[in-house]
Length: 215
Image 1 (tube, rainbow, N blue to C red):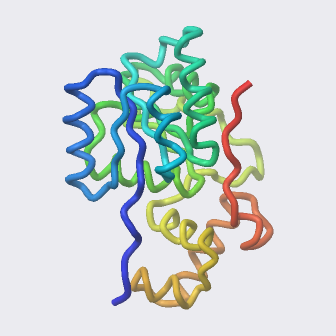
Image 2 (cartoon, helix red, strand yellow; image 1 turned 30 degrees about the horizontal axis):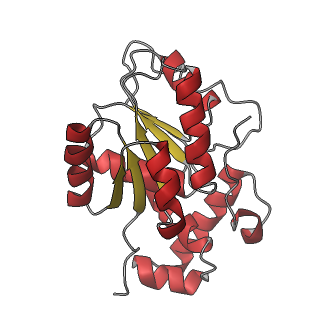
C-alpha cells in the first residue's frame, strides 16, 4: 500500500575507527540511515547539516563516567537536543543500566543485541520510549525501578513506536492506517494505548518529545 516509514536517521559515535566502520555498515544493512562520527567535536560540526532521529554512542564501559565522558555527552546533547541518546556498551548487572538512565540515556544496549533488536530499540526511543537490554539472566528485574501504583508503563511496542512517530508528524488516523497497512480501528487502539502509557490526555500532548537535559 502506501509508503513505509522513511529510514531512521541515526548518529553513531565510536572513537575506534574499525568498530565504527563495521557497526555503521551493519546498521545500514538493516535499513538505517547512519552518520558515523568519531567524537563529540565531529558531532557538533555535522549536526547543523544533518538532523537525526536518535544518537547511538558506543562506550567501552558504562562505568566510565569520568569528567571527559560527561562533557562529551553534554556536547552531543547540545548538538542534537531533541534526539534521544542511547548507549551501546557491555554491562553485566542492572546497576549499569540504571546508571546510564540517570545520565540521561533513553536506552542502554548490550553488544549481545541483534540487528533487528537494535532497529526496534532505536525506533522505540525515537518515539519517546525507553529500552534496556538484553537483560542479564541473573537479575532480570532490576533494570528499572519498581513501578508506582497507577503509574502508566513508559515502554512502547515497536508498532506503537511507529504510530507515535506518525502522530508527531501530525498525521491523522486514516493516513497512519494507510501508510502502516492496518485498519483505522487498529490505529485508534494503538493511539489509546500510547496515550495511556505516556500519561497523555490527548494527541496534542504527545506531539513533541521532551529532550533530555544535562546539568
